[in-house]
Image (cartoon, rainbow over all chains, first blue to last red; front, top):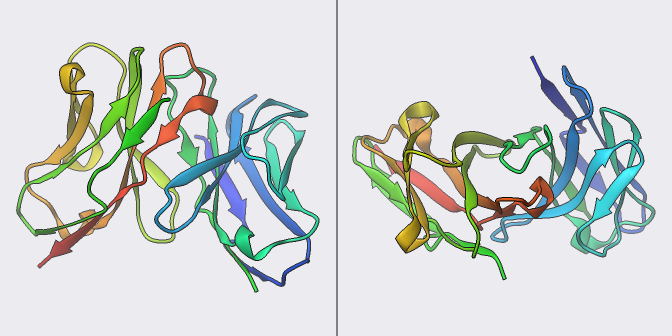
Length: 113
Length: 115
């Protein structure tokens, strides 16, 4: 069966520090991969999605970047964190097709101080 | 522009009572519709989905939802709520021919359950 791993679960980082959140998927090949951010009262915001290695679509211009160095690995990064980067970050995967549901990881709670 | 509205930010129901969470969407094309549930500090779990056919769909945990094209709605229901149903619920829509990159979530409805 397919599983998705996301780490770390919680992270406290000072303003201006770098960020690296990692997500890996097991049990499937060539998944679509997603990074979402969830801020209180604002629902889910799609940050990046990828349909293949090295293919990244950015939905919102911001301080963050994403990379997909391997088929089932998706990384969210920042060179310098801002206070506004605080939030709950969710990785998700799906198979190709608009009617395919997303499968989410357990999320990373990021607090920028 | 496409949008998804969940009019109720927070709902409180008594355990054993019925539940209906509202979801309205704005699309010109045929939509694919989803309901997800999120427990505190966790990721989202798919409850049910609608693509075509019977407009009443059954999901996990005793939930169901009804697609009403005339009202552009996809409301989630449960006949008898359990305390473990306390969570946040998200409606999501993607239009036919789009991709999951076009999936749009509502802002969520937080459900509290009174004993």
